[in-house]
Length: 471
Image 1 (cartoon, rainbow, N blue to C red):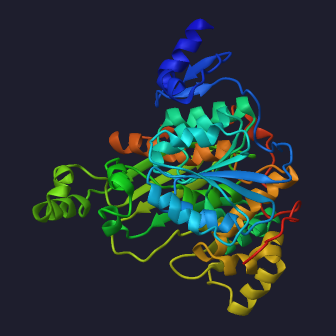
Image 2: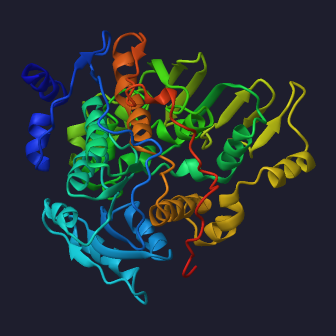
Image 3: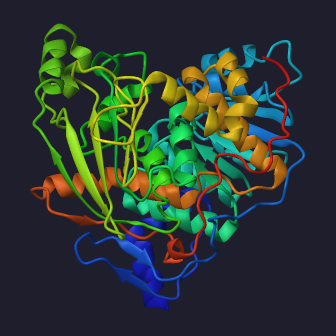
């Protein structure tokens, strides 16, 4: 047991992380390592968080950490939901925290401000009067903050990806299971209207047996990655020095839910390939010639412009994911669901359904399907979500659903195993790319419980009584 504990700490790097987060990790009953990844597999599960319903909260008291990019919008959205109390706003930069506070003027929310010190976020997590920590910081801070928050008795909602290394993925799983605190990754694309429609159709068998899915994040943000002001300390540009699919969740999340990944099936292994970088390094050199600020990036290697990753599941189904954030292609998340009876696809064109190779259903037929299979969550809150906004309303649907689940004591739609598995595609794809696209195993973060876990009920058969207090 002592040797197992030492191996666990060594393999995951938790010896150092534990000091940072103020906790130690209990020994597991057994430890094994996968043959081709060298990554930890926990042999037993502390507690199954899939389908877990935490005690209901009449009020959800929230502390926000990270108010530079996505955070301020979340503050505004949450202020419109019944049963929410915004207790704390935290950002390293005082002006960002203050700007978020101003969004709450003329509301009942009077949050305490935390800023000016890189450890102020810990004080938010340590407060006794907070139930949920909402994290919208740079990627590399998501796991340390989420772990610290759960260790201090808080549920966690974190922006994507939830983790950037395999060690971090396991930290999230182990901590959530041991503390029985939710760790939800804020994958808003699972709440987009067409994705919700196709999920509801999949649940009711419209597609037959789903055999293949596709997803992507194709979004030209080349100039944004090099912006001095958009991302603090150029953190996103620095992340793009990793070569793989760094941002798989937007495309993978909705497909994984439709395929019941972690709930009847699991991702087994992947193969990943990147083209060369034809754009980022040249831009870095061009900018460095004009501005010394960019000199540190002038001789760096960046990820290939397009990465394609393919995944095979335990039941023999396949998923194709693509990632491209630099080329002038039209925005696309692809979102393709292919079954034995029908197919759905969206992007770059509007969502379409087909039941044969002869082409897409006519608009009137699609309209009839939308009415027949409209998810209850869309029927109840969809129009309000569009008015509130946030990527067309899906951000508000996501936040509202999170609060409604916590207030009604319901399981969350996206649990810690989803957060770990979807985030793991990033580092695993890097490993495959580095090894001439050899296959890499995807760990089973559920420790076998995927065989009996039940499909997620994102379409809202229960709950739904949380009101919107203002538009």
